[in-house]
Length: 186
Image (cartoon, rainbow, N blue to C red; front, side, top):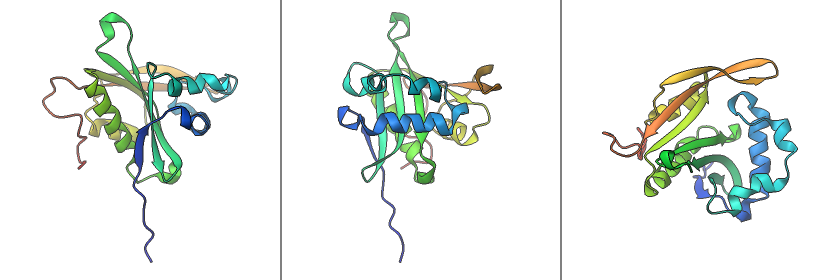
């Protein structure tokens, strides 16, 4: 008998997710320290309200979760710029899909949802950094019309090991192709 695969449900996280989100976020930092600028040990010392703040304040950063059934399986965040000259931009942050859910398209679904929301709010450019050598993440972002323009050497240092970060913007307004529908998606 074939096992049925559940489709992920993508939704913006809110206060009712305050139990699952902080632990899931810390899991990503712990399991993939070179992929995140935030540090697991430092984040563990922060009060729970720090991680929960974007879930309870609708004017804050936006965070979406990918759910398989009731289990949080992936996350992505969007931080709009607040400075007047940069209000046309926002930063993608905190992208993480649990490895046990690999191959289900969670990353693509999360990026598509974030791009759709950014477009609705007239954001013109999304920027991100990805750790150099993280080919699956880089491939996903390129599929969604992000393109590399430079690499910062020694961007972060984890346990004495330096990691470079590649800068990748995606232009949402006035682009020739649609970043809203990532290449290869339905």
